[in-house]
Amino acid sequence: MSATTTTWNIDPTHSIAEFKVKHLMISNVKGQFPKLAGALTLDEADAAKSSVQATIDVASIETRDAQRDGHLKSADFFDVEKYPSMAFQSTKVKASAAGEGTVEGVLTIRDVTKPVVFHVEGPTAPTKDPWGKLRVGVSASAKISRKEFGLTWNAALEAGGVMIGDEVTITLDVEFVKAD
Image 1 (tube, helix red, strand yellow):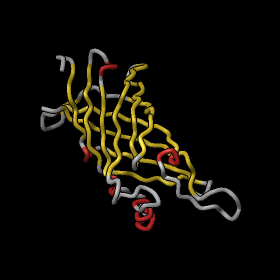
Image 2 (image 1 turned 30 degrees about the vertical axis):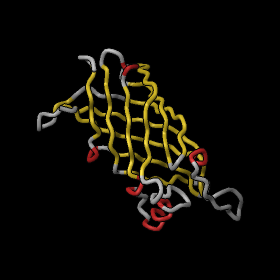
Image 3 (image 1 turned 45 degrees about the horizontal axis):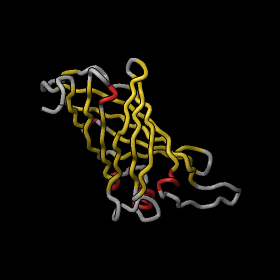
Image 4 (image 1 turned 90 degrees about the horizontal axis):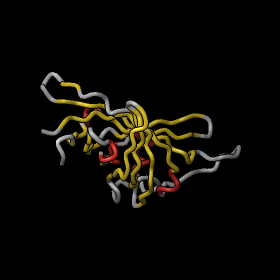
């Protein structure tokens, strides 16, 4: 690791992974995965040499409806008994403007791994917290096809269409703490 490369760990108490998907073809339903872990390797001299990896505890899913959460944890969707976590590993980082860029990588949901591009704001300038630790923040978003990841369960509607849309928007708000 060079003098300009630092490691930053996800602070799970100040980070969240959220998603939204069309319900009944009329509105969005949102949910979140509050349990995530991972690290950012940040090369301040050359952002392209930076990388990020993260895992999400799928059983931590929360949609504000216990019955829906149970269904999402079942084999119809995430099958948390068989696939307890999702993972992301970056393959390419590009800074495009001050504080913005893209992170390309592979996302694994269930037993399917596909390329995904996240549009990123950040990282913010390092800020010292009251306990002397340095922190940075990152926001990122991407859109995926849930069917491409094996999340194919759906139901036809009497009036036409389907209960659940295919396109899922993923939004991440992550705070990282500099490793000692």
